[in-house]
Image: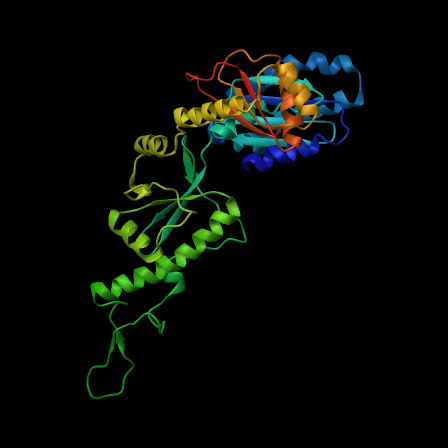
Length: 363
């Protein structure tokens, strides 16, 4: 989903709608403690209900009806993860089941409130874990917070070794022997007899997997994080080399063999963003732009630059508890994105970025 989902929401906002509701809330994964989620949802609805009723409009009534439908939709609440984002208008309903918690919040404006979602995707480091063995692979949808088995889309098919090659495969170099003087069908002894031949089998399967990993990475727009024994990982990389689709680090043990507590630790260590390095890159960009006279920090000045289509990148310190005019900021961020401006959210406080806003100009 990722930024393509944000793009879809921005495109929806180009339609003529006068009212849009955005709801963010933490949830319990898989419908566990559903009642707790429903109570929190009810509280958020109660918070916004008077504003919708005061409108005395068909648009407000349609949104209220949709909220009531959702409250009673058991299937909807069974699919929850760690966080939930809802975007509702009289004609649209979009939902994002998110994999980290969100502070409960509700916004009723002419535009969807997307800043928390942008921050989520700025932070999120999504990968597909390919847990490989010599004759099979298990796939996981993962990020730095958690993982779950990947349910492949219908047009993606990845097979285990035994589903592709059998003992009668002419390429599998099966050892076949006949015993006695009669011409009987040969007896098959396994599908390999020596370690060298087993390595050939493994290499053949790993070549097949590499092709499938390219398809998988392209389809889901994510890198592949390899996991497995050191021996299997070494052989896989020897057969296929290194490629840009693969995450630079690996998990040097079978992922399925790791308990849940260690999985959480491993994912955090490997996939957590390096905020200091990211922030330093932004500091360098700001300094270079300042030397060229191409940076602005004042919000009103930045608005004028957006109107003129002059901003290349807008760096925003988003870690602060207080954001200047949140709804107004959301509006101008969306307007800038529609012009192709890159939005960079700094999510942790770092030394060197003094201003809340730094807009780097194209010209």
